[in-house]
Image 1 (spheres, rainbow, N blue to C red):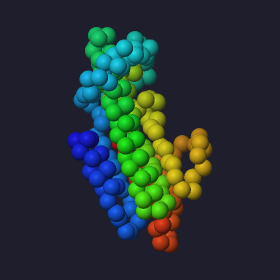
Image 2 (cartoon, rainbow, N blue to C red):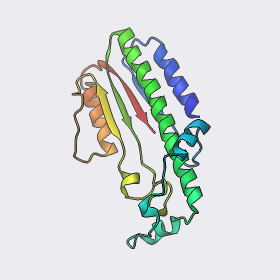
Image 3 (cartoon, rainbow, N blue to C red):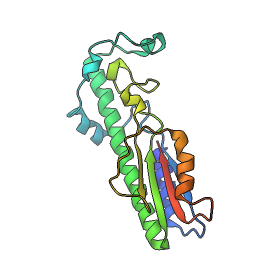
Image 4 (cartoon, rainbow, N blue to C red):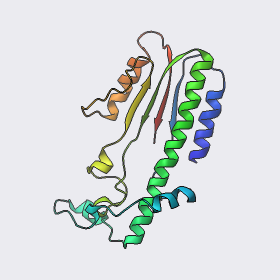
Length: 190
C-alpha cells in the first residue's frame, strides 16, 4: 500500500500543474503488524536491544493500559523492535523520494513551496512492555513535526509543544490563503 501511495505522489509531482498545489501523502507504515523488508530487518536485528523499561512494570499505569502489556520472550521483543526500526527506515526513504520529487517539481515550475512531515502518533515498540500507541509515554506521544521550504529559517527548532490542530492555520498562513495561494505544499503524515 505504501509503495503505491508513494508512487502515486511521485507520478503526480512529475506532471505539470498550473494552479498552486497542496499535496497530501499519507502512508500506513510503520503500524502494526510489524512487517519490513528482509535486508533492513536483518540490519536492525544486529542493532536493537530490549529497552530497560521492558524489564519492570510501572506502578502508575491505569487498568486499560495495564491490560495491553505483553510478556514476551526476549527474542520476540527483539524481532518486533527490529521490524519496527526497519519500517521506520523504509518510510524515511520514501519521504526522501517524495521530497526530492517535490523539490524537482518546484524547480521545473519555478515555484516556491513548503514540505511538511509529521506523524499522528509514535509506537511503544516494546517500551514498558507495550506495543503500539494509545499511551502518553514519550515514544507514543512525541512525534516528528518538520517544515522546510520558502520563508522558513533552516535549522530553527521550536521547543514549545504543538498540536495537530495547529496545522490548518499554519498551512494557511504559509500558503497566504487570505490572498492568493502562491506556493505548493506537500503535507506528509504517517
